[in-house]
Length: 133
Image (tube, rainbow, N blue to C red; front, side, top):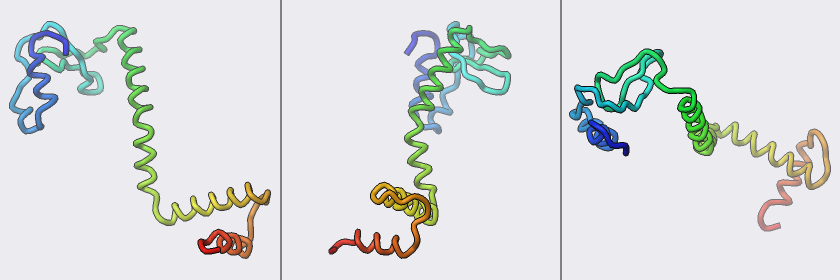
């Protein structure tokens, strides 16, 4: 945590439950070392104090590039979570279609069959894979 006015208040607001954090206001006076967040389309506010407000981007080009890299890294870390969420959203019908496509690919890999495998061959293949055979 950087040192400066109102940093303790900010840390408490970030870590306490929302109902308690709402009771800890931002500082009324200028903190002197703003850390910005985008509050609206063209509005930037300081995390620490009420006077910290601007209508223009408060960062220089280097800081903007660093924040873009940070955002890209956060998105990359979120990809596995999105994949898990997507698999949960698949309906049983969609999952059945995926499994059928996987069986088709497995069949093609094992036996070199291209294109559509007819129903009788699929049934025979499934019977041969069944436990107890």
